Image 1: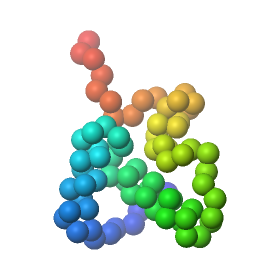
Image 2 (image 1 turned 90 degrees about the vertical axis):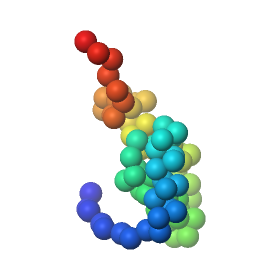
Image 3 (image 1 turned 120 degrees about the vertical axis):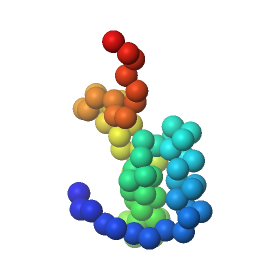
Image 4 (image 1 turned 90 degrees about the horizontal axis):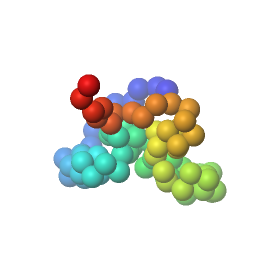
Length: 76
């Protein structure tokens, strides 16, 4: 993946942070990736992928391709 720096209005950042706080997404990058993917599907590619808007991290966790990410581990 490439790193891209963007400027966003404070209200957008606040909204993204609320989604993360509701445990709907693991981090800001994932929210932005999904938003851009959905825009490209609607405006450029014209077909929705099977994922149905589920974050990539969640898809991979369900497929057991990667361990759970950014979830607190119980104390030992």
